[in-house]
Image 1 (cartoon, rainbow, N blue to C red):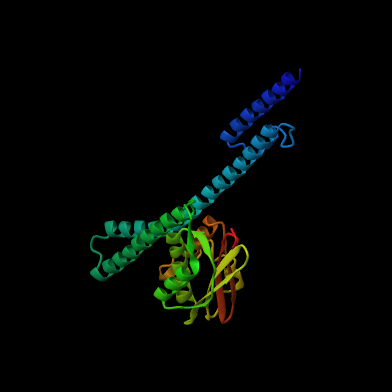
Image 2 (cartoon, one colour):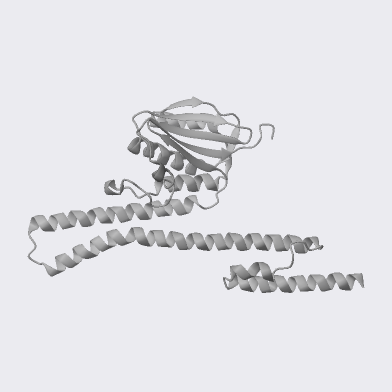
Length: 274
C-alpha cells in the first residue's frame, strides 16, 4: 500500500510538472507556478524538481524581457543614422544637379553615420560576448593590475593578495573602457586604487574632473546612454564594464562629486585559506 501511495503521488507530481512545462513553452509564465507541485512536498525529488523548475522559469522570463528591451534599444539607436542615410540618398537621387560643395557636405554626413553604425555594431558584439559566461582562471591580480596600469601610464595605490578567478581578456577590455571614460570625461589626474576584503577585491579608477550630475550617475551603466553622442559616443563602453562585472559574479559602482569621480569594479575572490 505504501509503495502504491508513493507511486501515486509521484505520478501526479510528474503530471503537474508536464503541464507546467507546456505552459512555460507557451510563454504563460504567470500560470507556471500554479501548475507545479508544491515546493513543500514530502518527496525530496519533487521538491528539488519544483524548485529547479521555478528557477528556470524565472531565468527564462527575465531573459525574454531582457531581449525585448535590448531589441527596443537597438532599434531606437539605429533609426537615426539610417534615417540620415535614407534622406541623403533621396536628395542625391532627386537632385542630379546638386552643387559640389553641398554634395560633399551630404557625403561627409553619410560617412559619419556609417562610421557610427560600424561602432554600434562592434560595441554590440562585444557587449553580447561579454554577457556570456566564460571560463575563469585564477590570476595573481596585483602584479597584473600594475602591469596594466603601467601600460596606461597611471599610478597604482594599495595592493591585493592572492589569486582571483577572472577572464583576463574581458577584464582588460573592461578596465580599458574605464580608463578611456575617465580620460575623456574626467580630469587630467587619473589613478588606480586597490583594496580587498575577506571575499572581494576592488579595483577603483579615480579622476579629479568636474564630476557627474546625480541624474546621469543613475544612468551611466545603461546601454546607449552617452553625453558625447555628437563626438561619436555609443554609450556601450560602461555597459560592457557592467556586463563583465556581472559575468564574474561581481558588480560595478560609481561615486562622483565635483573634483572626484571613482568607478569601482568589485570581484569575488576565494578565502585566503581556500
